Image (cartoon, rainbow, N blue to C red):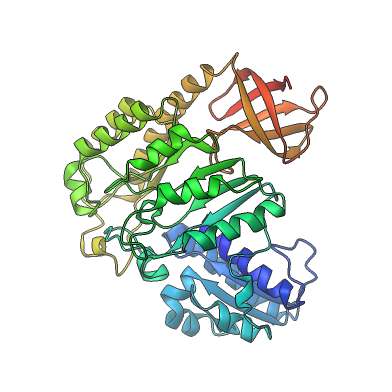
Length: 422
C-alpha cells in the first residue's frame, strides 16, 4: 500500500524470500497463496483506511479458511501497532518499518546480508524505484513520516552504485531516485550534501540511461544539483519538489524553513539554470487556519509558476504531529472544493503546455502495451503520476522497455498522442 518507498521495501522482502527458496508473488491474482503479508501506509486518513480495509479483508479470508496466516508490516503497523493488536487481534503478527529481519524469521527465512540492495522488481524491469536514504529529520508540522520511518539514514555512495550495477544487469534503464528527503542526502554520513556527487556516480553505471530525481526539499536546496541536471545527459531534466504552500504564515506554521519569496526565487533559478526542466510539485489545501485569502494566494502561485505537473492533497489532521495541536477548522467540503479548484486550474495549464509539444519529437521510453496502444513516457514524465505518450499499435511497433523517437501529433491535458519516427 502507499508510496514508492513501500514498493521498494516490498521488493526487498520479495528478494529475501526468493533467496530463501520461498515462493512469493506481489499482489497475486491467482489467490493460490496461504500466507499474506500486507505492507501498509499510515500517511493520511484515506491511505490509513485503505490499509485497514485490506487487513480486514484478509483477516476475513483467514477466518473462512482461505489463507493460513496474515502478517502486517509497514508504516501503519509502525505507528499504531498497540492499537491494531487490540482492534484486529486475528492478525498473526505486526511488524514495523525496520523489522525486516524479524519478519523474515517469522516466515522461517534468514536475513541474507549479502543481498543488501538486491530485490525482486514489481515494476517493469526497465525502470526501478531507487531508495537512497531512509527516514527524515525535517520537523514539518503536518507530517507523520518521522514517527513511522525514524531519523534520516543515507546509504553510502559505493553501495548505491553497486545496487545500480545489479539493476542494470537485470535490464533496468531508468532509476527513479526516492527518499523521504532526497536533497538531505549525505549530511549524516559525509557531513555535507552529496546528492550531486551521487547522481554523477550513478550516471557512470553502464546500462543506466535515465536518472530521475524525486522528493527534493526546498529549504537548503543544494544548487550543484542543477548543474548536474543541466550538464549530464543521463539525468532527466525533471525535478519533483513538494512545496506544500506559498503563504508565509502557513509556511511558518508548517515549519517548512522557507518563505514565499525564497520559493519563487528557487523556482526561477531552476528554469534559468536548466532550460526546459519539468517541475512537479504537491500542495496541501485546507491546512488549519487557511483563509480564503491564502487560498487565493495559492491560485495565483499556480498561475505564476505554470507547473508542468502538480498534485493537490487535502490536509489530514494526524495525531502526534505538530499541527495536531491546532484546530482543524477548515470544513471537509471546503478543503475538497479548494483542491478541485486548484486542480482545475492546473488542468488548463497542463493542456496549454501539452499543446506546445504538438509537432515536436521526443525520446520516449515505452512501459506497456494496452488496449491496442503502446504507452510510454518522455524524460519529463515519471511513471504513474505524469503524462503518458500513446502510439497506435496498428501503425507503430516498439518493444516494451525500449526507447524510440516519437513525433507528437495531438495532445490532451495529461496524454500525448504520436507516431514513432525512428
